[in-house]
Length: 164
Image 1 (tube, rainbow, N blue to C red):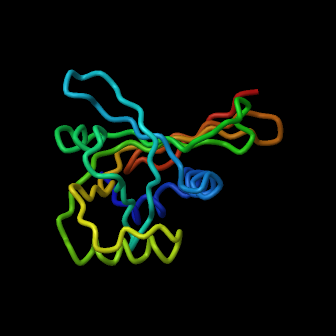
Image 2: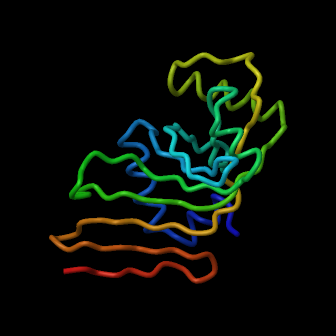
Image 3: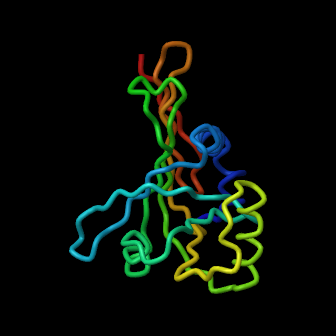
């Protein structure tokens, strides 16, 4: 399993598409989790990269966080509205850890306020999930009229498939 910083080094192509699409959508992604009965749940989320961590934090008492507290596996997909994926899209897979570090939470909320103007300073998190164990990722991009699919597996690097 791979941390965020290791991912940036080990999967530069997947990381580049993820970061580009993440910025382009104002941080909006879709989070896939598993419900208690094992069925999938898709939820919007605005993950942030903060202090070398991919943070999946948000509104308290949401079902997606109850899902992650019970089963830490996730899929994170960059939001796209283009069926031709002209700007590409990316998916990350892994598990989360719920960090209970109150000082980290305080710094994160200050950063969030400075970056976005959203003021939740002084609030407490029910959960503060970080995607610190990435187990895979992939991208789809349209490059010079060809569909390029990049698949990343930790320890094996990236593999690019070109579809004409």
